[in-house]
Amino acid sequence: MSSLHELAHAKINLYLHVTGRRQADGYHLLDSLAVFAGAADRLDLALGNGRGGHVALDIKGRFSAGLGGEDCADNLIVRAGAILRELAGEEVARNLPDVGITLHKELPVASGIGGGSADAAAALRLLLGVWKLSLPPARLNAVATRLGADVPVCLEQRAARMEGIGEVLSPAPHLPPCGMMLVNCGRSVSTPQVFKARAPVFTPRATLPPAWATLADMVRDLADQTNDLQAAACAICPEIVTVLDALRVAPGCRLARMSGSGATCFALFDSPDAARAAQAAVQQAGAHWWVWAGDLCRSTTEARTSIPA
Ligand SMILES: C[C@@](CO)(OP(=O)(O)O)[C@H](O)COP(=O)(O)OP(=O)(O)OC[C@H]1O[C@@H](n2ccc(N)nc2=O)[C@H](O)[C@@H]1O
Ligand SMILES: Nc1ncnc2c1ncn2[C@@H]1O[C@H](COP(=O)(O)OP(=O)(O)O)[C@@H](O)[C@H]1O
Image (cartoon, rainbow, N blue to C red; front, side):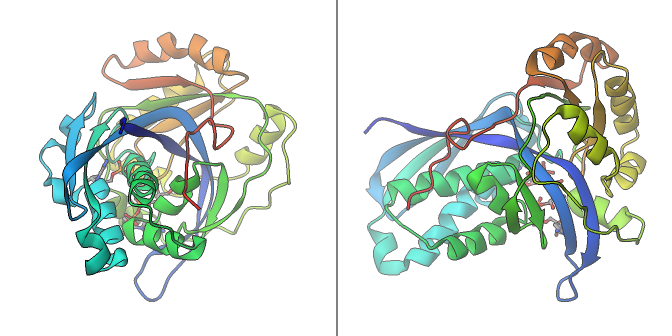
């Protein structure tokens, strides 16, 4: 059998409102518009010789060192395998083929673009396929949420509005053509720490149109929204402010903001070419920064998503 692969695209929160707090466990209630950028990790899967549904993980790529100190059992890819084995039950699990997954880690770790969540979702897609398991959509959403609040949206890798703690998904407004730049200053920022450090105020749910015909229309509406985690993340990691300043003065930048709990920031441009044209100028502001420019994923086909029925 030839090797299977999936791309795990970066999730960008175009805005992120903290609308409340869940009583039961203190998780925050969110209203966010998530889109997916062309930037991605890649997972290659090869079938092993044994049975039992074991997942062996090998990590390569530009940001592999960011996960180097961690036990592979803690990796969200291996945890995705463990949850599916548990759901399959002992008898079925005994006969599941072992697999080897190579993660090419090209997205910065703990950086507000959900790389780990995207990897977990890609692993779920791959493993459901090779193990020939199928789950009803609500069950799959619950499994994904157990792995992380960002994992459900990463299953489809399609622009979506996220509510609840992230697991309540609805269609995003139709997006206009545009380009995107992503910049990360190289410092990992802890999501729980940022949630804890934010000012204890809530922002109402946004009112969005069904479609944005032009980037100017979208930017006008996004300018009225906020990332409620940005101030707290900037206090923890002041270099985020430097990144935002560099993005705002980049030629052609229409809007610059932080994604998720940071530290990665994004900027919107008229086109992927306009974003790429501004890349060198931004890289000059921070030689050690990770800078990516290109297009959004505009369809699930483009994002190479395959959720077995
Ligand atoms: C902030 C967001 C916005 O999309 O993105 P990232 O910064 O991670 O990319 C996500 O909500 C992150 O999702 P994810 O990283 O999967 O979070 P989880 O592993 O479930 O939770 C990590 C920790 O973040 C806090 N958390 C997370 C989600 C949420 N709605 N409320 C929270 O309070 C909790 O302290 C939790 O223990
Ligand atoms: N495959 C993975 N890639 C990245 N992080 C992972 C992975 N598996 C587990 N993790 C853990 O999840 C944490 C959050 O990772 P990540 O999803 O990259 O953050 P964010 O959502 O803020 O971009 C990391 O600090 C790391 O400990």
